[in-house]
Length: 230
Image 1 (cartoon, rainbow, N blue to C red):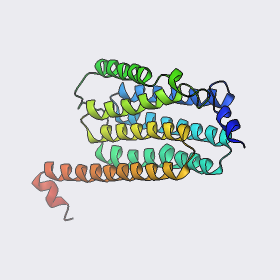
Image 2 (cartoon, rainbow, N blue to C red; image 1 turned 45 degrees about the horizontal axis):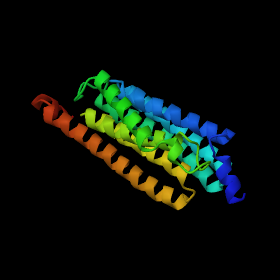
Image 3 (cartoon, helix red, strand yellow; image 1 turned 120 degrees about the vertical axis):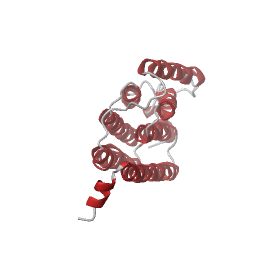
């Protein structure tokens, strides 16, 4: 497909552009939903939904640009981010550590949502769709991806529990991917960035699991420790 036709296929007026805009909006709503919740299980659910929508966005770009490599990225995003990470987080962290409600927050939910709305407005003011080159990308995707990155960072700041901060990091990563698959057609760059961020996320999950074990041992009584011998 000629370069000009590829560019026009992702413009805001095209069907692919509209689907990409819609996917970005749903991802932004998932970030807000995570920011406005106190339940660990919902954190993971909203992240999983956001990742599935991200996979759809990658598939839309792959179809518009006619790039098989991006189809591989879309499938990998669905399997790893949409299914594997949420299932592993639930099984190895939430269930084993018996986490239900997040009470370790530096601000209230209302304050968090107000700050999130302010950051979203800032993203639109800093990167207005009208300032982008005409017909380059779907008009709303770039500022929305920037807003998702900021909201992920906000989740990491206002939440004090390691699991909640981990989900905030993963949301931030999804924002980076959304902008990357929209603005670049260089698959190696996306792979390098994604592998790095996913490795960091994997290390964080391991550290969280180990810290949970250490906390259990530190708070265990002597009879409980003696019972481990049997």
